[in-house]
Image 1 (cartoon, rainbow, N blue to C red):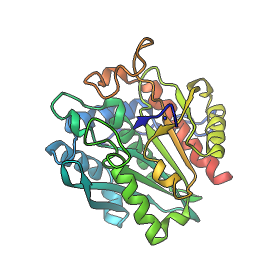
Image 2 (image 1 turned 30 degrees about the vertical axis):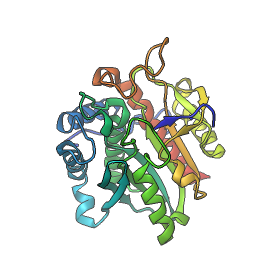
Image 3 (image 1 turned 120 degrees about the horizontal axis):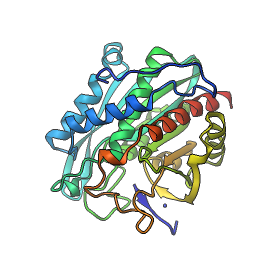
Length: 305
């Protein structure tokens, strides 16, 4: 993702408990943290075209064997035109059918930066933990099928730029492709909300009030914070961010980017972003618990709207 100030499971258990807040802890933050570790152990470097990239796809697909068997797992393969030539990319889509006409898309990118391929960049916060979050949410919806709108998980490829400098044409490859595809086949008209998870696992997380997001979805995120007792983790910063939600926003879909772009030290808020310091020790089960609680409550609130 790019900030524009001028414009920004292999057995992972789901802990089900009676909720003092709406759906609180229905998905375990500790389980997501363990799943994240498994993911980066399997595919520490996931840049496009690498063995790790293929391993990441295999890891995700392996956690959705029941959906594969039902035909509800889609490998959306496409060739992207990039600064280094054509590259094969894969969006991965998992569908959990609901009982109402409409779709809530929960999304995260799963790859690492091509231009960081020569350093030990594992993207623990930037891509890995939110991939694990979506896998854990999928496990939840497998056991608790949606009673309202269908829930689709979208693991986007090519969110990161190929070159170091982020541009509109060199970024968001997967989301630009799938938004155009769904626009062409009519799917986009059924999407009630597109909710993106990005960089929301680190121990000092505070989710931005991302100003490219749709206002009513920001309001629902604020309500979800109150519902779950997590308001203190929201909206310390407010800024626009270029991220995978923008191709859907441009097509009129209500969007929400759930992100904490500030990932570093007080003196350098982006010190860990896109560096070899984006490591597992920066993450916390508490932040992942907050993120899971918020996502589950957001789905409930979108259905109630």
